[in-house]
Image 1: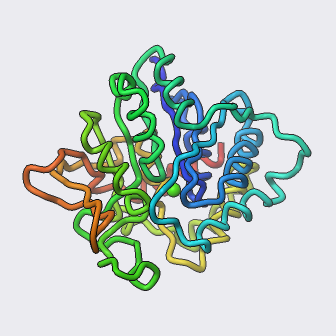
Image 2: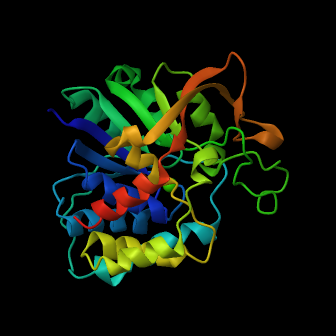
Length: 307
Ligand SMILES: [Ca+2]
């Protein structure tokens, strides 16, 4: 069986690293590269941490690229500084040098190159804003034919968003952060014919990172994946934290754990609902992950990180 070609585009949050690590454990996937979009992070430590994780997991042949796109509404600094913490974890700093290559060209150009050179259409696994994807498509519209589908953590369909009114005055609380960072780019991607399978807050709200699960990661006593995952989740356990990016990414390993539902949607790009993924009759058709077998998902990530 030939492997599914995947290009990862993450934005440097704590669960972005763990989603990347989960991808590396999947036997059915061939990861062609990782692009880091400068959204939920500071880009230098985020790129550095990503390269160190590939080193640690034994995948130092996979290239990393730094996207140079810009968003409209920056993520809160409090979220972004987790990238510095992860980059300084002892488990990622046992060696003085990094082997995993950082490519010279910007991430959006790297994305174009990888897609053009791929032997078959590629799945884009996106766990941050769609800005890098939109920039690549704008520069090289021909790559649309090489994108098999986009699996994306983003959006909130029939639940409130996570852009809090207290942090972003003037907003109505309906937007999800990955859309809100740059709703215009999300709307650009919505204009394409590419199949989009999104993992919205509607689903992730039901799949929390629990204390019990984090403790199980420790008890697995498995180096390095389970140790690193447990350490990363320990950082965020005081907050309400959910399996956002990891839940979206696990779909590539076990789509049968999920039920998809088709919706017609529109991205709101201006005003108080800027960044909302609105269900609108006659809108752009997308698939949303609607339900997941939670026990199977929890068991799966524990198993993969103990490999
Ligand atoms: Ca993310």
